[in-house]
Length: 58
Length: 253
Image (cartoon, rainbow over all chains, first blue to last red; front, top):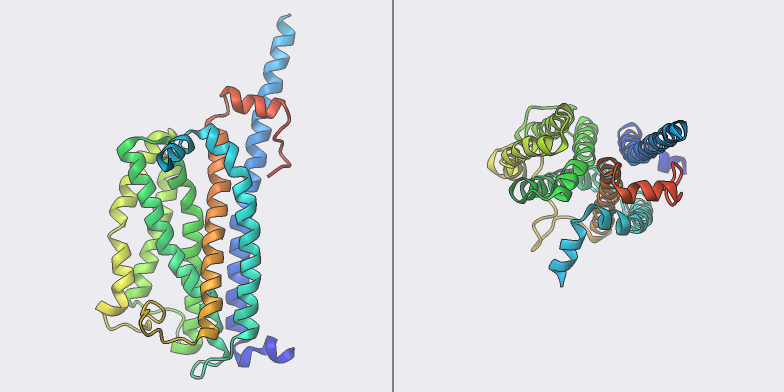
């Protein structure tokens, strides 16, 4: 197992590469989820604002 | 038949309705293949007879580099369709491709540098392959910057489409750079299909990772395009109804 993590002396290069790749892929995956969350919240707040306005008029 | 399907798919509402499930399936398939590819590449494949264990960077470096080119061509193709036929969905697809494309290009450069240091003795050289790949990153960033600099999405799509199409000239330069110039970057290993200079135990995990990266891209593309559709159609009746009826909320994917 230690041999596996040692990577024949290239541990720094190999594991940094894999680390950077999966970090960037994870962030790129999360970004649209976060954006979707914000867009739906935006639509909802616009709807409640409209409802409030309508109620005030009646 | 197939044209009817594409015709329907070009409607944002229909696109939104059917791609939700696609994204989930593609995402899970991508994850399974990625685990399989990593197992094959990091554990099953033997060390290289020249480069020892350091060559294992190939399983993420080469798929990233392939995808950086594939995504650019895909993006420019969709941008061109949007420019010529004014198809809204093509504009959305082009715009939603760019972030993952830029990420792949960045990763190809970073993993290349981390592979270059132990093998060539340097993180970076101004060799033809590396330099043209760096220009590709700038093209992606330029495309993204141009999109966000112009407020009107249709105008943004038109301006950035021209940039994307002009940048296509860089693609064959990247691909053939190792053949045209005598560079530090090694020549092609895989694409010589008649006689690939790589052993099957290394080739199979590499191809699995390449497919996984491609699925990752399409998953990400669908997720981003769906956001874009929601935002652009936010005042339309079908989006309003979706939100009121609670069929989408902040929490669901």
